[in-house]
Image 1 (tube, rainbow, N blue to C red):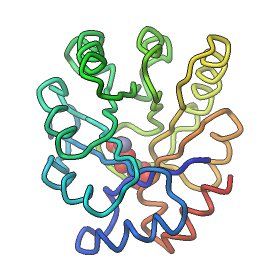
Image 2 (image 1 turned 135 degrees about the vertical axis):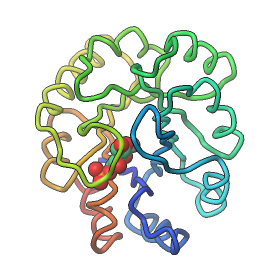
Image 3 (image 1 turned 90 degrees about the horizontal axis):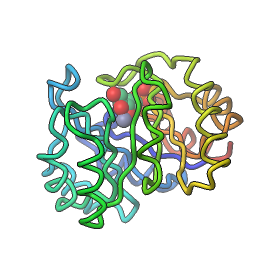
Image 4 (image 1 turned 180 degrees about the vertical axis):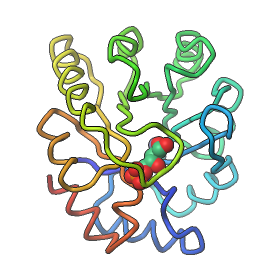
Length: 213
Ligand code: DX5
Ligand code: ZN
């Protein structure tokens, strides 16, 4: 499956080196967790860090916007070199209006649902989305435990996407390791996001192990 390492758990003092190891392992993209301390109880990266990461890789940069106001900030992440904006349906703004705006500006996007959000809620937004991101932990921190029910959601989404002929990749994010990634793959997931599993050991091997699934 495709692997999108989340740099949230990379050793920030050696970021360029960590990115190189992910390239060597066969990563398909990088996952950038953007947190505002309001939508989730944690703070992470801003556009300047995305700009620096852009200089270290030509792979696609997914900006996972865990923000109360993704509508206010997506442009600066795009201008910094982000390739795709991942938008939570739970953000307290009109998801439909924001996605229309992104589409009008030619900015690729994906739709994200939290563990407690039913797949139903994402359906109206999938037609022009490139990715459906199914959260398998409650967003905010890396190193949490995978929620097994997420696999059922992947299955349900796979069925719907196939039956409706949609061109949307299913991505899973949170607590991913080799074992549950295999289960997600079997259920129909296309992309695995992983932070703590990849960056806690031999980075290249962990990326290639996931990629080989
Ligand atoms: C959670 C983030 C994730 C997460 C991944 O809020 O969206 O991308 O930190 O970390 P691990 O793989 O450690 O769960
Ligand atoms: Zn994420």
